[in-house]
Image (cartoon, rainbow, N blue to C red; front, side):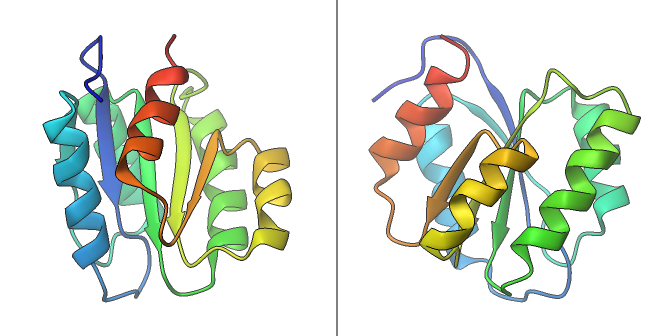
Amino acid sequence: METKNKIRVLVAKPGLDGHDKGAKIVALALRDAGMEVIYSGLHQTLDQIISTAVQESVDVIGLSIMSGAHLPICKKLTAMMKEHGLTDVSLVVGGVIPQQDIQTLEQMGVAAVFPGGTAFDTIVTEINQLFA
């Protein structure tokens, strides 16, 4: 499914998680759907992610988290996004996310959660729906 508007997405790997194959593949799928994708690389601090989001004027911050630290990372990042005036930027999260944590993430302000195995078409469709 192709995106209608040019949505700018920052794909980031926070913390010490050293596995980025999935993030790179999702970044390619988003790009192939017509989105502009900035991949920030491994081992990003939350400050670096915020800084890149501001510099690149992104519409979406997409975190790939395999470490199991998704709840504290998202809690801190959503607070930092508010502090930096990024209230119009959507946060989405993918990776190793247990089903029981999805509602908590959504209550924190995460716009969409993509557990491992989510189809690329689903990811593209849900990100597009954020801007419909």
